[in-house]
Structures are given as C-alpha cells and as structure tokens.
Length: 269
Image (cartoon, rainbow, N blue to C red; front, side, top):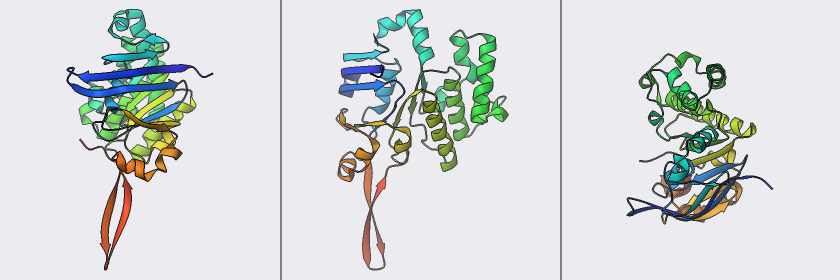
C-alpha cells in the first residue's frame, strides 16, 4: 500500500472566521503521485495549498502530513518545523513572494542556509539547480531585473534547492509564454520521475493531463465537486461548463453562427 503523505478529513477554514475558503474537504495524497487541484477563481485552491504547506490551519477537521497532525503547536516544535520545511517545498503563484534577496544566487541558497545545510551541500545544490534550469547567466542579477518567466524559474530553483519530497505549485504557468510554460511543465514532470510528490493548483486545463494522476475539482461552494483521472474529468464538457472551467464562444462566418467550447488557460485576477 502506498504511503499517504497528506490526509485531510472534513477540513473547513474561513478567513477572519467570516469568509469561507474551504468547506468539508476530504482528501488523501499518496507518495510519488501527481495531483492537480482545479477550479475557477475563488474556489479555495490557493487556501488548500497554503494548508498543505502549514501556512494556515483548519478551523474544523484535521490535516495530517507524514502521519502527524498539522497545527500551530506542531510548528512550535523546532525539530518538526525544520524537518517539515525540508520535506515540503512551495512555489507561490506570485514569484516575488519568494524573491527578496539582492541577487538570484542569494535567493536560491536562502532556504538551504536557513535549514542548516552545510556550505559544501549548499554549493552542490546551487550547481545542480543552475544546470537543470539553465540559469547560470542570472545568478548575479537582481530579481527585479528579471522577466516574469525568469522569476518563475528562480522561484522554482529556490524550492528545488531544498530537494523536498513534496513540491506544491500554485498556478505555475500563469502569465508565461508557451515556450517557458513548456519548460516549467518539463521540470514538474522530471521532478516526479525522480520520485517527488507533485501537487499543482491550476485552471489551465491544457496542462493537467501531463502533470496529474488525479484531479480534484473545487466548486464555488468551496467543496470538492469531483475527483478522478484527467481522462474522466476532461471528457465531461457539461461538468466543466457547470464549474466555469470551459466557456462557449460564438462567432459568425458568412451567414452562419458557429459555437465552440474553449478551455480556460489564463489566470484572471
């Protein structure tokens, strides 16, 4: 039986105890799998990822990671906190959240330094991610000098430098050109081939078949509307329309009106 990394039971969360973000979520994520969390804006995807990363905690229900309850008391234990941060890495939707050092190199090694890795190990990891992502020419640049695609790569590099078992990504291809998106997808798939557990929130349905074994669809009630394989869910156009994941586009050609369904492929704020 595969090891369960995350186990969520009847999880609910509200911001300021007034604004519901997650309502009665049940979910299990197994080691080595690729899971996509999809849904329209405001359905709770980012809140779920933050909960899996131990940044927020449920108002009701329970979240376990590696068999241990995730709550504020757990992170008060320095040993647990450091071990969890070594095992779980988060790539934020906005890469600037992760990029705050004077240079790209300093941003990449910040995490390993904070987690107590040796200088030799940090040097080794810096070299590895620099080669893997082909970012050697950016190391001495300031983050604010980078394009959005370059910032995304550096944010991913800063997470990969920790070498976590689990990589959580929030809208990793949002705002990227097709070539950069392709590179990001390749990085995600390669990480999974190396045994990493991948959890991605997105509503770009063009990429989910490549980066998912299992998909969870969230609806505007902040609940899981459906769980299944990409093939099962993407084949159900009625369900996708009901959950605002595809839309119908009409156009006139000569004297006839044609109707087509379109996937939602960009993040709208």
